[in-house]
Image (cartoon, rainbow, N blue to C red; front, side):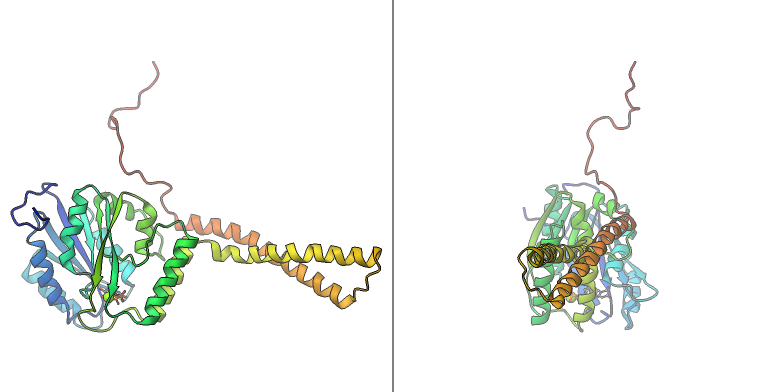
Length: 331
Ligand code: UDP
Ligand code: MG
């Protein structure tokens, strides 16, 4: 049987699935999205609902959401007081969905085709906690966005501990335990995908081709994406903080032996080193010392950064044994 077979017996009987959709100025495309979601989800043997999070849209998105809610109790809406960004819309949606067995996040512009959802659910039924997706092809990405995305993933793979494959997207299914863990994260400047990948858990990927957006313009122009990329990178990597220190060390490693050589050469070999050359090297050494001191300070700032982010210290996936029983004490 295929996962979207009607009449299929649910491998997780009684489970509920919530879809979370961040919406920013998407009024033209929401009806098509609703129709495609209903067509797909009605063939799935689980109770489902859909939370549409209006992230401060300036068009009629909220009225459209209200009309969906009035017509079908499975649709719910959340309206932000202003635009807080997609990461916050997803966070609010997942927190509102707490209590469900799984949540599936997807964009409102139909670039995350709802028809893939049965594949995500099938993987979840196999026991995966996170079923993420990889965009194989994007129909309407500009060259700048493609190069930017490649560079971003290159930096993220090299300089962070995240297992973030290139072109992974926010279109993903999260099991209940991942949702509950996510709600413990309090950091304000967050990369939704990054946090989820940081958590670990049992994860798999499904590839899909992203079509052009259903209507309108991308809400993330290159400038907004650049800021998001810098925020994401710096919240998972302390490398930029340490750069000054590394530079200082390199400068000291070159100038200190050079300076010693010059002094010794002047004294013992009567080398004719001009005062200008001596002071230039001496000044550069001082710059190296200052940069090293900055690097030391950034080590402490890095610790503060980690503490302020206040991430859970560890995450337990499951337990074995009689955990409800009182602890065993020695006789
Ligand atoms: N979005 C949002 N808040 C924003 C920007 C975007 O909720 O400030 C939503 C948007 O409506 C869409 C999704 O996030 O559902 C992805 O946005 P977009 O299509 O602009 O991003 P891209 O596909 O270019 O990465
Ligand atoms: Mg899009």
